Length: 298
Image (cartoon, rainbow, N blue to C red):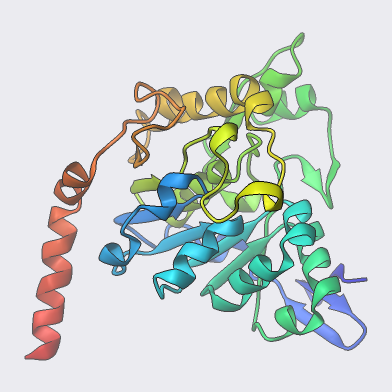
């Protein structure tokens, strides 16, 4: 089985003769700026004209890689922290692993992917390891309460603390992925933390509809994978994005927008924008990119 090993001060994914180096998140922190698109899997992602914004970096996740392939876009990052998705849709996980510039997965996802096709990871020069806060190889290092108390003065980890309610200690936001990330039971939240870590200050989420009944844009009928959105929305998803709205965005240079007009997430938490508003928010970057292309042609 693919295992995580430490050799000569560096971490590797290793099995037999296969050795895949892990690039640490600290190397890429704050290296980027401007806008980024986070591509989720709600039905609205299938309608979004992604190719129109091909000049901007895209962070794809889980099955949303289908949209990137359809639009002939190589995502800047492909991320996955659900081994069940890899086991149930290994074709899509392989597509993401092969086509993305950067690949970040949890250890159990890497292991599931490697079991399906050992050639996929061996073709990459390095990968990045997604790890939850207060976890090592998926096992809690401290109790939730102890961990929340220990990081209460860390500016990179914004989270609650409660002696009575366990859930409150599991909700937060990480500005430094090398210290882990908060799950929130939905992968777009991990992508939001990654975008902030990388230095992007204007983040647009595509396909974050958050309605279990309408499923995902790339699957229908009996082929649709189960979802726990309804069970997790009030307890984890909504409170987590409220942390962003109330504690992260006012204190740090981060603007977060939802491009799904029918998203279950209220506009009071994450503002919703339509295509016209989107172009307005990108206007300055569009002009700069157009000017660069003109200079290159001349």
